[in-house]
Length: 398
Ligand SMILES: Cc1cc2nc3c(=O)[nH]c(=O)nc-3n(C[C@H](O)[C@H](O)[C@H](O)COP(=O)(O)OP(=O)(O)OC[C@H]3O[C@@H](n4cnc5c(N)ncnc54)[C@H](O)[C@@H]3O)c2cc1C
Image (cartoon, rainbow, N blue to C red):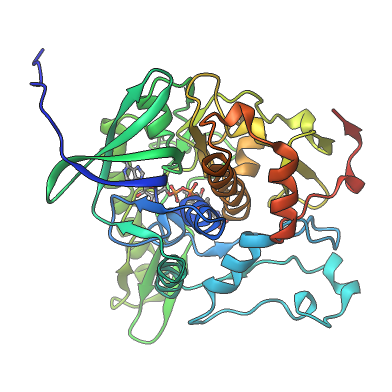
């Protein structure tokens, strides 16, 4: 055991809202908080926005609809879908455009494929236009607590270690890093499958390969599963993914009789799906399908099948312990199959917009406790800003 010496840290700056993590959830959070009047910064350990969606090359914006013709996600979820193709390529399906053939919406889902580089640039533009301070190449390390509130987040970058004071913190790390470090209850799983989505080039064409071990079948012989909160497994997934990609390249060369196929772009971050999440005040479960919560902050369909609709409760974003901490994205409180529904891009944008709006309102209400937030005000603000919260599809109400 080694004891790290106590030392005084410089205060880098003070913000109303600190967003940790610049994936889809972090971008949506920062945008929402800034638009609702907060002074916001976003801390990102990499040097580009988008997280798995861009650096992880997961370039399919899954549906904003329920598969039965109804759009269930609007607001920043839809704005980011449009931003993902602002610098092209990519197309919104014709029937989902204004004036499009509504009858076709039951057949064609509201989703698209985007280009990671274009999306990263347009997200950065959006945040800068909204005066969000970006801290790239800066890793969240720890928190300074004042009783049950986070007084400052502690970060490290090329300038060394420093503190950023704040009124509210949004954990959009994907891995619930802030929740875990600050002593909030979290849950980890080690079920991640080997994955290595990548682009190849054969001298003429660039091709996307959605390379992954099957998700819902036994792990193939010779493969294994991984935990995203264990550094050994993080190393292993990085290395195994690269071998997986190379094996695929050799296979392609053989099948296509072309020795000039090679990997062009490979993921810059490991492709973990579910790692560690918050154990929230409410955990979303399968039986919550079409269950309307009083504190619903948005909705989502199921990317895997047509029909299901989930109402997302505010309480799945907050824990029992830390009063000014809220989560967004793939680390909110959802269990099993419902976690699988909630972890993808569109619901990450929904929880991001809700967390950012809630954090800005918290600063305005000035009580520093998400448990005391005016939920009616949060819901009406979200609806005014394009979020769809419509109980008409529910089977049961709280
Ligand atoms: C193989 C695979 C295929 C997928 N396919 C699809 C698909 O086709 N369509 C779809 O919609 N979704 C898909 N997903 C899921 C989806 O991409 C992600 O779950 C979603 O984008 C998560 O967004 P997020 O913002 O919650 O988290 P992330 O994208 O993980 O973003 C978290 C961000 O926080 C940063 N961060 C983490 N820790 C720290 C720290 N300590 N300090 C500072 N920064 C930190 C990270 O660098 C990252 O930028 C897929 C996922 C995988 C792994």
